[in-house]
Each structure stands twice: as structure tokens, then as C-alpha cells.
Length: 159
Image (cartoon, rainbow, N blue to C red):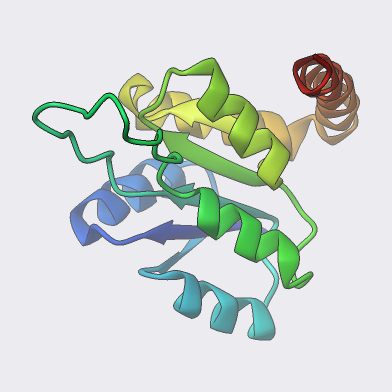
């Protein structure tokens, strides 16, 4: 039985590229163009993994000195998926951000893994294989990473 992936992706061309790469690895990919479509899919069949591909960050011409930093794209989707308690499996996020703050924000919101979008689809396929084929190892690695992230967040919260 092929492992099931739910891909949340608005860009149908990128979704087709993702499906082409992943299909070669005996994986079943369902594409949802929005969080609402993803939630509807979760009511009928739970995937093994959810991959979120948020739209790339919009660049602004000149950021204002008083403007608050914008949260990374996709953070609301991760929070929503975790809050509805319909899915407790791994959530992987394709991200453009290399900021450590953004990465911690994703982990704090409930993401299990991040993959830089610029690293390419083959790298993402390898990342997914890690989650599928090394379940015990990946869960142990996740727990170690989660503990380390919790420590970082605790240190940051203390003055």
C-alpha cells in the first residue's frame, strides 16, 4: 500500500511537479489548493504526512523601521491543522525563510519538519522517505529536536 501525502499547494504547476517526483517513489499524493479543501480531505481519509507549500513571501520595497515583523507564510495553516485535532501525524513545510526566528515559529506552531523550497523537489522526496521508512529513528530524532527547540524557546522567554 503506497504511503499517502496531502499536499497543500495553491500553484497547480508546482503541485504537478511535486506529484511527478513523488509518484516515482510509490507514494499517493492528494493535492488541496487551500486549507478548507485540506480539512475536507481529512474528513474522508487521513494521509500519512501533510506537506504545506505556502506561497513565497512577498517582498516589500522598503520596510518601515516601525513595522512589526511579518510571520512566515504558512504559519496560520500549521496552527489551524493542529488546532482542529483532525491530524496528529507529521506536518512538513516547504519554506523560503532561512531565519532562525521563523524556523522556531514553525516548530512552536506544530510543524514537525521544514524543508527549504530552494533545495528542490528531489531533496523534499528524500526528506519524506526519511519520515516514511525510518519511523522509529525519525520519531526519536524528532523528540530530540523538539527538546532542543523547547530549550531555545525557554531561554528566549527568560530575561
